[in-house]
Amino acid sequence: MTLAVVGIGSNVSPHAHIALALDVLEQSFGTLWRSSVYRCPPVGMRGADFLNLVAAFDTAACLADICVQLRDIEAACGRDRAHTHTPPCIDIDLLLFGDVVRESDPVLPRADILDQAFVLGPLAEIMPQARHPVCGTCYADLWGQMAAQSSTLEPVQLQTDAPLSP
Image (tube, rainbow, N blue to C red; front, side, top):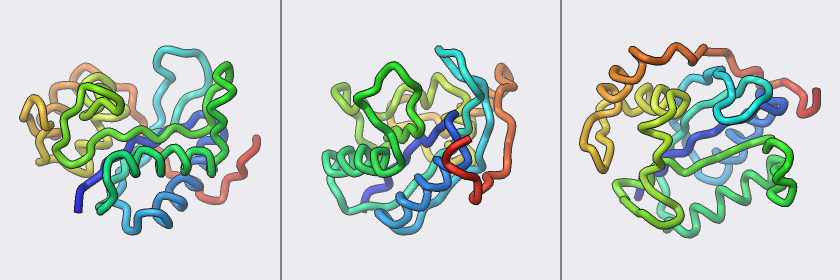
């Protein structure tokens, strides 16, 4: 079994889309270990704040199959990749796949782990002593370094009964 770790985010009816994504992920992969949900401002775009979290699950599937399944789950949750001019209603990014290191698509580990508080903070919450497969530093230590410079994460309670439309 391989531990797959995904980042999940939304700023379009985020409570509903994240709750749906978590349900579909759990139906697809079984038990999920997940972080708290955090609100943070958008990065590189304008718009509503995002809700983000990290989830992990064990899988016997190969990397290629996991990538296809994650795209299918995004589609099942309403994401339409044909409309690139609108923000996605849900984003599920593969952050880690065991200790796999790849420089081609999908790049692993995902660079956002070291660059974005909304990824590293939740990852450090659920896997504090695990080590980044490239730099070798544990996520708790990496988060300690980043958290001193970042105050953009606000924990929120996920509202699982929120509607999909505003």
